[in-house]
Amino acid sequence: MRDDDTLDDPYAPSSPSAETEDGTSAERTTTATRLRAYVRDLTGRRRAQVALATGVVCCLGLTVVAQVCDEKPGAATRSGPTASSELAQRAEQQGAASRGLDRAAAPAPSATATPGDPDTSAPARKVAPARPTRPAPVAGLDEDQMENAEAIVRAGRKMGVPRRGLVIAVATAMQESNLYNVASGVLPESQDYPHQGVGWDHDSVGLFQQRSSSGWGPVGRLMDPEFATRQFLAALEQVPGWERMRLTDAAQAVQVSAYPEYYQQHEWRATRVVDAIVPAGR
Image 1 (tube, rainbow, N blue to C red):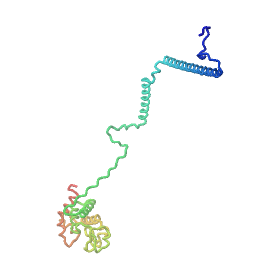
Image 2: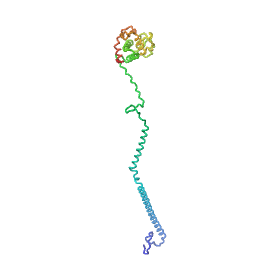
Image 3: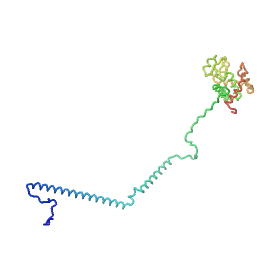
Image 4: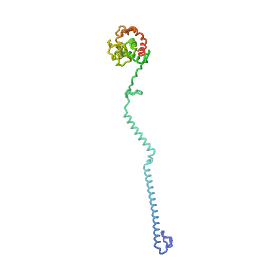
């Protein structure tokens, strides 16, 4: 402040400027300096105003939030345990509803079903019957001979022939063909069928060396072990009292062989073979 009670000009130079020939330049410099100072002052004021306004807005926001919390107690904690409890209750309700639908859609158990009963809704699995095991060859026979003996026993059992008749039939085939299905060299036709050797006893063929020319049947049929057995046993059953005869006499009554006593030697072997195929008591 001056002595005359007037304020100093803040934008005035610190010392009076001399009037020189460069007075115009000095005045311009002073004016530019004043403008820069004014701009700095104005910028500082605006920054202060913006900061003040920002502070007011924040205070107003906090006031509003406080009022909302005061009006709705507990609202600020909804995201805490209370919200989690409500979500859990809703999930439990939805789960119960879905479980109820599942139970309703499931078929009701049978009224007669009890725990442990087999499930009859699925088709029963078919189990293939086990094939009977074939007996091993006995009495010195090989596989082919044993198979032919089985065919004789099988055919006789189908006819209902007693066990004694089966033994006679097997013993007769042992003597006639050694239990092989033999074709005839005299009848080339017989060789067109499955056979296990060729014989030369006239036109005799098969296990029992039966002759088609004597009325035993067609050559092709006589080469079938089962058919040949039926022919022999049918003729044996026509012999009166054959069950009480010696084996060789019963066989000879059917075969009319030139060597009638030869059949007897095979009785023990034939008995053993039949016992192996059909155990006693069956």
